[in-house]
Length: 286
Image 1: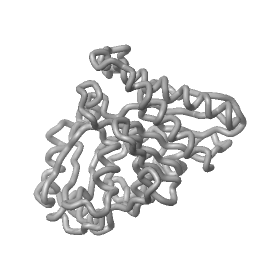
Image 2 (image 1 turned 60 degrees about the vertical axis):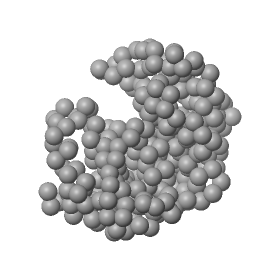
Image 3 (image 1 turned 30 degrees about the vertical axis):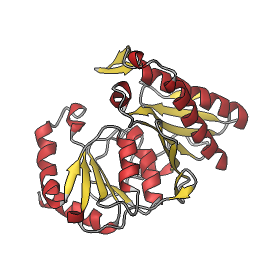
Image 4 (image 1 turned 90 degrees about the vertical axis):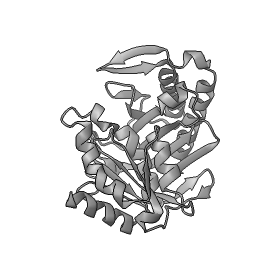
């Protein structure tokens, strides 16, 4: 549905506009707390802006949006209609960057096609967006091609790990009570030694797109490992990365498509098959 691409762009534009209005000294004000996590004013403003854009879209298109949002404890229904669009939303990925005035944060969105189904899996999401909320950039895909604004993009074709870089997300231990930081760090060590360099920033969605799905950047960031990940961080980027020619699986090399909406998969985003195989071999050998 082509209209959903317009909805994604409208949401990102609305969030960018409303976030820019918040005085810097007010961005980090805590609005609410849930299960040990905090929602700041900038997060709340971003989510409200996203919901307002969805309400306009629902009235225009006659469909309802079934929204899983980073800031909500339960699913939110927006609008009415027989057909519904399942929506995964992180209205502000990289909140600490935004609060600290570091210009690297984004909005992540994923849509299914309109459906009458009551349940979907990750594979049903066909539209993905990562909107750079600082610069005028939107990475997006309809599931067929990956685009940066109006230009098509492709994943890096660098196949030598020692001429490329990997991003390792070891902050997951904060959310996975069953495992400590040491467990994740020990699993990452073989990969640190196998690549030219490694790194970790904040604002994972924007990292994924700008660093993995960019053919021609040298030395390339060719992979991103993120264990126990929330779906609002990974589904939008997954749609774009796969359309750009990349590979996305769990750590057992199984596609994410069959994972349900309650899953927290360990994910590998790779720019190409050879890099993906190298990472899998390193994980398996540890």
